[in-house]
Length: 485
Ligand code: MSP
Image (cartoon, rainbow, N blue to C red; front, side):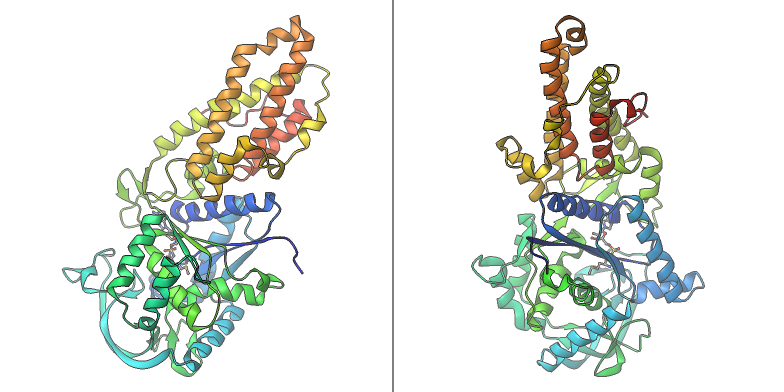
């Protein structure tokens, strides 16, 4: 039994048609920061991420490389697992949709929805885009090509499909978004995204095909093995299936927070809750749709050749700085342009000259004297810090996923401590007034300790280095937390 307060957080599961880039890392690092924060607040946390391995996109990518989808999917899944380890992502489980336990649970839930009469047989005529892994609407087709994937061939098809009665859920969905008293109330953030969804719901919903004919690479429908479950339905259920087959994790259902990019909001805010309602399962509490990175103003994509990999950032800046730089540039709900040169500037200004320099200045004051740190001040944790009104803003911005604001708050604190150093000049007091020196020093040590707690969710290794240096100043002497680039 898990007795503490529970917090279940998810990222999308990533397609294995492509290697991880910083867009994927963005969602995952954000989720990690939140998961770490809630753990520090003594919640019992379940943090789930994984890979989306079925679908035509993966088959196509595997084929161009002369590999089977199974082998190819495993290779790329490994890349995701490895890069998350490198980035110090603290996920509690990594789900792969080709895991037979997931497949079994998807079949189970589909059978339930089918038995309840929410699925019927029909014929679908339409244009499928493998890049999007969906049938396109008229507005999404320009000059016979998909708006988002002009290099992908559109596939025109007419086939037997099973349809999900999405239209039945129009009113229920409107109510879960508009009525905060509804027991299934689901919050979409940022608020403008919620408005978009409500607007579209008011235009009406059509039933959707949820199977494809004669596709081998997918989960077969339990009542008709000539059909495979549509990849998005298979993928969305990962959030639920994982909680069924991992010991004790069933206590975490439903998710408290689902982080996604804005491009996949429709699937998460409309199709996903409707499927859950059809299956009599409770709904997630909150979905946050973040913005997109562009690189020097352009969409980041393999075909443009401008993708930045997390490995590249780690090589230049190190793990903690990569985590920090990706979250600090702009507000989480907005789009923003990123470039290596902008990362360089922020790294030097905020980390090398900011936090790094401050830490060296303070540690320098104590590493050449026989100094016993006042252990009593070094005993707190972030949970005790949050009881102090001075940190209300930190807590609020963090739980609202306003990471840029949380980071600005920390930077402000760093500047304040720098000012104390400049004003009090403790290196002089050390020689002239030992009582005052000790007083100023204690204040500085406590402030630096607080900073080490505040940065912990973002930069766990740096936080530990600072804490260790406070206890054993000589450990840090001569080394820099963030060498200038
Ligand atoms: N497999 C689906 C998700 C299924 S979840 C049940 C998928 N995968 S994806 O690999 O294409 O994208 C995963 C996430 O990465 C999405 O949240 C997407 O928004 C995010 N990003 C992809 N490119 C991005 C940027 N350029 N910038 C920020 N995030 C981006 O969709």
